[in-house]
Image (spheres, rainbow, N blue to C red):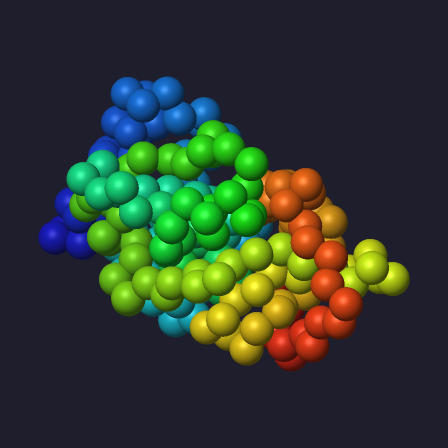
Amino acid sequence: MKHLRSMLAVLASSAIATMSLGIPASAAPTNTSPDAVSVQDTSLSPTAVAACWPEGTRLKKTTEGRVYLIGPGNTLYWIPDSRVYFNLWATWDGILTVPDRAFDECYRTPSTPLQAGRLSKESDSPAVYIYDNSNGGHRRIWDWNTFTNKYHFDPAAIQTALTINPAPVPWT
C-alpha cells in the first residue's frame, strides 16, 4: 500500500507538471516507452519506473537551474555550462521543468557531468560522434534517427576533426 501511494504521488505530480507547465503530452513521462528497461537494469526506484522520462529527454528540477540529459542506458548526465549546451543544441527549447520529487524518485544515483561535450565527425565519413569524457571519449551516435529524433542534437553544431579515435561504446 505504501508503494502504491508513492507511485500515485509521482504520477500525480508528473500529470500536474504536464498540465500546468504546458508540457506536450508526448514529452510527459509514460510507462510505454520503447526505451523502457527493467528496474534491475537501472538505478530507478521501483515506485518510479512507470513515471520516468525516456532517454533523450532534457530536463531540470523546479528548484535548480542545472540542465540534465537522460543518456543511453538511462545514465543521467548534467550539462556543466552553456558552452557545452550549445555545442549540442541550438536553443534552450525542449527542456522540461519537472517537480523535484518526481525527478528524485526517478534518478537516485549521482549524475555524471558531460564534460567538454561536443559533436564531431571526420571530413571523409558520415559518422557523427558525441564527446563523452566520462565514457572513453568520442562515442559514435548510433544513427541519424537517434541524433535527430531521440536526442534532438543540432546538426549545425557538428565540428569536423582530422581524426577521431572512437570509444568502444556507442551512443544509442
